[in-house]
Image (cartoon, rainbow, N blue to C red; front, top):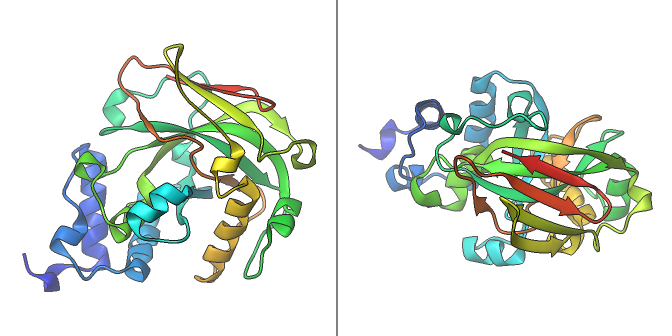
Length: 257
């Protein structure tokens, strides 16, 4: 296959085929090495549009310094959340819908007002937040073995798949989110633990970064949107029959099966 056969539209077709066929593929950059970050975001936007579901928020990926260093970047990436990704609490996710899912716990903001960059600070970001809740995100790369470059994962909408929110909501001013702790369990057994400081030092920093990153593309975070601020722990495999639970200090407990 020659480079000239690859376009944004071709990349969307390939990623859609992998998602709907539940079959992982090799990274697009193996065939299209010229794919850069700006073009990858064009693929991401077109991919989400092709899925036809309403956008209801944004997710951040690669929020930890360790993950950023592995990928050779100095800021998180963003992806879109759509209404068909939202899972109702207590409803199992059919294993056949996904390829090789993993789960990570998140602190989630719901916006009370529109938040537009550039120049958003953590303080101005938090002023736009209506409520904070716990969440679990299911990521599911369309690439074999989760092997990809930065443009690959951006094009794949940051490995987005599903998410669920807890039923406890708090006003942001009532919590120290940097110290908010989470214990992650699989089938009742301890898997990992972290605090909100694992996300860019504080989830407010991640929210500000998201707003400013979107502003570079002429976009903003809209009122009512959810923002998944990034995994507090490493993502863990989510296999058939598993029950994953995240227990937060003040944000309650959220579960996925």
